[in-house]
Length: 313
Image 1: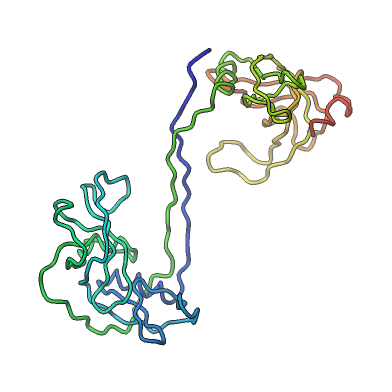
Image 2: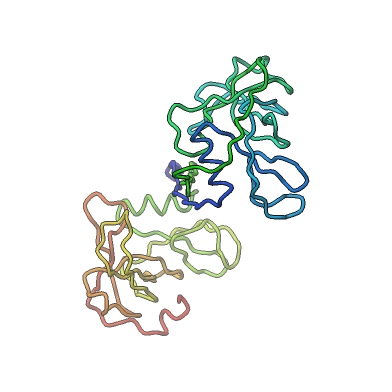
């Protein structure tokens, strides 16, 4: 049994969000070194601002400037900063209540060590050198022992306001396919397709999962299937993927390999897209050095009888 495979994987996408009038003013203000909150009908000032009162659900748009100084209400020390965090040296995550605000904002505090941080300590904003209208325009907070700063009473109206933000979402993780799929991937390197047979129902599953999805019992008996198979269902792809150098339209299909009781998916080539059909007999096409088939092409055999694959639709 070969060593179980593992590989680092990244899932990421850019999330584009439009901003309402309150969030637009708040982020535009940060770009201009102005901290804005929003005042509720009962006189509370919320920073960061929201568009609806969390207590009464009333819409609120009364913008008010607060001071760029404040007080730490609670904190936690970050010994090992991660990629994308505000500072690349150890720092404290803090909730800061700005002078003039009734709620607190979460951000980083640049401090020498955890023994220098405490609830109630005074801090001020350290502005980023390059500001674009994002929360990162506050580079971090820093300790401050002076008098509270005085806001200038900004109205919250700006020329060239920020109307949207791009928030990248990313997840880094290590994936391991497990014993069964490691054997499957290793066999593909030798241009073989290997599944596993259930000891109870005797069905052969490709790719194998290590257990029968029908009976729920472990599978261990390896069975080589294919390489030929039958198209069971398919779709015509008309939208070009950015990471695939394949011209549209093309066909993606479920293929029941000979000897398998579960259809796998693959691209169909070597035939016009509008001639692909259920029952079409196909075989894999490998490219030099590839670890899996590039696509499947027609074998020239007569189409498979519907009764031979109807249970695999």
